[in-house]
Amino acid sequence: MFQPSPWRADFPAIAALQRQQQTYLDSAATTQKPQALLDAIAHYYSHGAANVHRAQHLPGAMATQAFEGSREKIAQWLNAPSPSQIIFTHGATSALNLLAYGLENEFRPGDEIAISALEHHANLLPWQQLAQRRGVKLVILPLTAGGMIDLDSAAALIGPRTRLLAVSQLSNVLGTWQPLDSLLAMARAQDALTVVDGAQGVVHGRHDVQQLDCDFYVFSSHKLYGPDGLGALYGSCRGLGRLQHWQFGGEMVHTADYHVASFHPAPLGFEAGTPPIASVIGLSASLDYLGGLDTKAVLAHEAALHRQLLRGLHDREGVRVVGDPQAALASFTVDGVHNADLAHLLTDQGIAVRAGHHCAMPLLKRLGLQGAIRVSLALYNDSDDLQRFFEALDKALEMLR
Ligand code: PMP
Image (cartoon, rainbow, N blue to C red):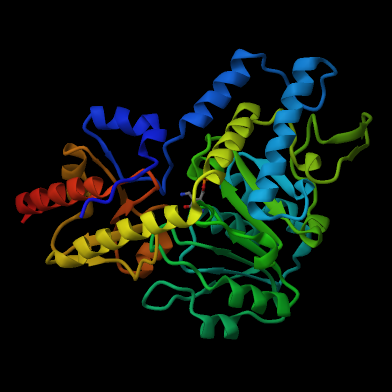
């Protein structure tokens, strides 16, 4: 049965892609943007750009108001207690690097940082490098066969030496929601800091950082239908209180002399230099747009498409879905077929999907895979997109087998 997307027309790029015979199924990498975002950025640039916080003049005041308004909107989106707990970064990756440098003094040799076996490189490498700098042990929490962090193993591995736990909310390879409530409770019981990589999770449904009770939550704007070059870091009061300043320059300074300086607290103290102002304003428009949608209807639409995707993959001989995806995406391999060859033939037919290691090389290695094809969904996709994907897949497999 045809499953239309009532929101498709709000995304001009989808029609443009369709005119180029492209079916976009790579939204876990980045999303297309609503018209509301394009309008907001065009309005900002066509009505007078100005730097934020520093200027006395009217354009500066207007830009600052819009910029700080966006911070407030993000705080509301995540149900953060205060906008001052939202730090703008350049993306989830830069937020995680900020944490790995800003928390460096928390660690002594022999301490442990726990992450899971499924983490994106962005939530692995900053901790791996910190562990090397400080003589800290990086503990890898294993997974269940379905692709969830295994809670029994986690209970055995998270202990008094654990100073920090950093885990994904929704896996970008496996499409599995992680059991954050239980995991974070284990870390809290050891008084360890907790970091949630919400890069994928934030896109699907609404999430409440107070309910999660994490110390830090990071996401990238471009995956949440917002502009690129922008991300956000939420910090609890306890977490922010432990964070040392990391990058230095304009905006973050309270007073400066040649040999000494003092710095603002969060958020400005962690936003050195001119921030991506237009992107911040654009994200605000995207959140307004998303906030006006019926979240339940969006989730139901995405769930129906996800079921169609899984059914289609499971129905095809030799196709192996990786893990047991619960939402938004599915990765798969095909017996006897190299994923790069298959990806090539899909690309030739205008199907935009991802192939490779999905920035999670250790996970793919652990699963014994050289790579996998990932199909990922967004609210603007419809069942015809999947139909076109499956037709292209069948044709490609016919050629390859
Ligand atoms: N974590 C996860 C789970 C991701 O999927 C991604 C992006 N693929 C990131 C972190 C990093 O996001 P960005 O590249 O926008 O910084």
